[in-house]
Length: 395
Image (cartoon, rainbow, N blue to C red; front, side):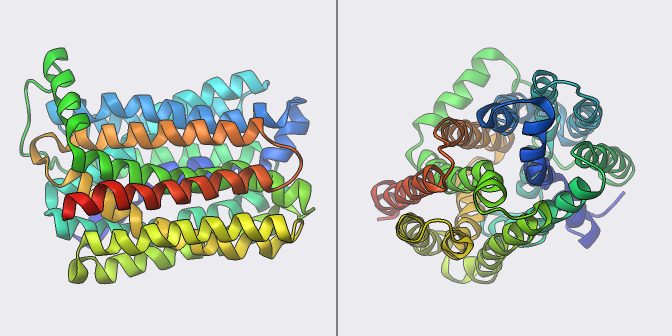
């Protein structure tokens, strides 16, 4: 068993948290090809993304309390195994409907990684230290969305859309082995009543009524939804509208993700020095700045790759700064129900993002404008959430 806090322990946690971005980003270059393969509409193909987030959101309400009751390790092994078999079902799908169903079950398994990975960080570290660790994990995890579309683009060119799901299945089964052999239980506050309906409802009600918790969650949800609007719409914008090849789309996506890496490095370096509240103030400002720049530049200079990439780089810095600090702020005050707090935060985050992503698909008009409107609105929402809730709480 690995010592909690060791380097390889953190590497495995990072891989677990990376289930989300790998599952949404690796097959992005294949979306236009899948549209042709299945004879589906843009909104139908984008539904494979939104249904993943919907399944991810609902499943978190289950995984958090289960891990509070039975421990992180057994529930984590169960979830990763489900993910592996669902990934197999994805690459064997013959219709868009079958793929959508398989993606839901893939999400059911995938969410065990981020939910329990964050809870394990909270088990092992305190709140301020957890923010720093989550930020550094985010920097490493950013390699997943940075390279996943690029790697997925080449897989699409060389082997077709199924190849990404083959890779994800293998990745899952390797992690089952690593977690089973190397990770020990970290939950020292096993709660035998965590799964009782009354207790469960009470925990969620208490969290929903907690002004600070909801402020952090809404701020987190806004920047994540802006990111997901880009994930949902960018492949069609870059490949169909701008005419890029799938592998070049992966390069553009990777450049944008470098903004996220920059943000997480800033958060990791300065969160303990200046505190989470200060980092969230600057992060929320960058979110509205990046969103408004994107909206203005795309409407002024439509059809140019740089008009999307440059402003999104700024927006993604805000995502890298806000995400780890808002996660730590939301979960930190609740050590005895960290799993439930992590689950509820993830549910709200994913539910809002799924709605935004589906909206981008339904509003698709053959231009980048619907995507940019959604991102600008989410940037404004993040800034207002900080100004009206989090700053007042701090004051």
